[in-house]
Figure (cartoon, rainbow, N blue to C red):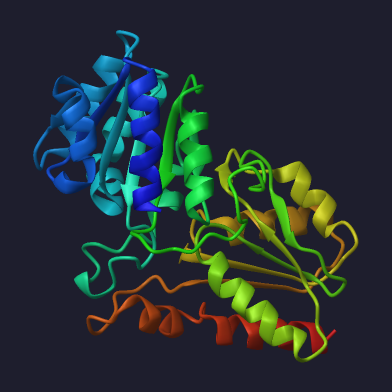
Length: 308
């Protein structure tokens, strides 16, 4: 996903001289191509993310289109007030790019885990939040960013996330939820690159003759409330899966819709726990610990389906 981002932003960088890239003192080798093309439009702001946001907001008011890039918690939690006031309040079309969402940084620990970024930003008005699930969706987000008139947050993994939809042309529209796999036995709704674990769980469920519909949401803010109303209208069982704490996330938004519709959907929300790990685990172990690995998703859906 990270390589796809830099490949696509380079395409945009070459075509549109208004595009400027700002970094919070990381990732040099990744954007060498940008620097080689036009070093004046690549700015290292150092380890001062709040200042970087303010600087980008000022640039945006001069018709420049800034992309600011850092590790997910650094570029969201450290500068939340600046994102709120400098970007959202002033309607600055700045794209905040957080690399390493969820547990992507694994053994680096809680300082680097991005499991609360969506919830924090969801408190703010006038911001688009993208949680792509594969490299091609990242490319579509970058393309869409060039047309926005407001602030946006793009949540990336680190790298080596596999393609899910084949070619870029076959990748569903990121602005709308998409059915990844059509089934007849309930629904699993997910957002972001945890979709890979959901698809593994779906394969396990097929072995038990259970075939849920898999839906992915790439644009989580604004939340697709009307689409979700249609999904839950039949009263079908629903599970949500996200690499994020419950607060402000996909599950709570879905629960709100289910409650408002009143169709009695059986519902399970799978999220990361709101605590600090007791050791430095890698991402795979953290997913198991959180109950959002493929095996846990499989067990949760099998339980909700069979108990119906």
